[in-house]
Image 1 (cartoon, rainbow, N blue to C red):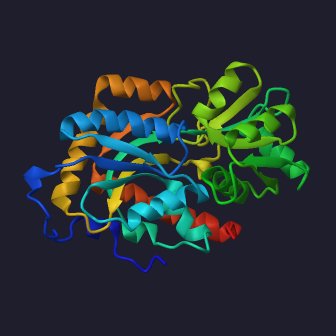
Image 2 (cartoon, helix red, strand yellow):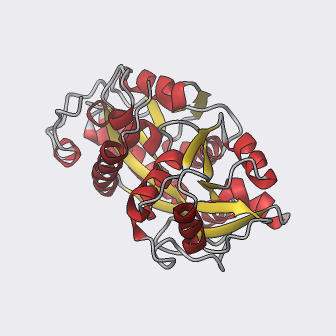
Image 3 (cartoon, rainbow, N blue to C red):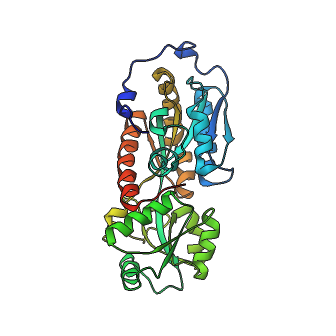
Length: 322
């Protein structure tokens, strides 16, 4: 696993023969695989982007939800699909840059078998505690954890997920010992957090927003380099003094490796056009996402940096998905 060519080298690789002339692509509907169940934030992003990009391409983009195994079932299906541009993946770090380091049973090599097309959006994560908690800052959380070694619990959406590994990165930086309690999704984890069954959690700003507004949760800091529009008064982790937990949670479109670059360029232009449209940007910001709209080369650089980050965290923390 991961004995691979650089993603940047792949971007500049010689083009493979096209099954049809590039100007003819696409001649039939495209499938965009979302590796999670319908209704989540990734699914909403996929449907909005697909609707807008369809107009630019002159063909429909059909969203196909293939959930399971933290998104790896859907991701594997795209990695093994015909590299012709007609099967795409709405990818996130969980499948592409985290799984290679923590999952022992992968049936494919994500950074080798999937090629970046376009970086659509980033979503901040936020460290939250119950509103009734005495912790008001990240330093409060760290101090409490140091004073009660092994006495605090934190929730995540599952072993090896980004909500798990972001906390692991903070644990490593702060030298604290808090107990991991994995859940099957954000909703049950946040319910237990606000009742005091667990004491903290990193989750997406979108997932936390309603409970924060209802006075059930208190946000301590967001993981992005700038503050979230959903929580403009909440500092970043760097502002709070903990830049080691600064993480970009990206989402983007990827294609099977070997897809002709002329085809991925056509897709790249269509999705960028979709994501930078003013009404699209406004809708994504309301959902707590930061629209990006960067092409394949810039997206490949994000993936390379992310691979290095999660390799370091996974090796230092020993996190493994059995």
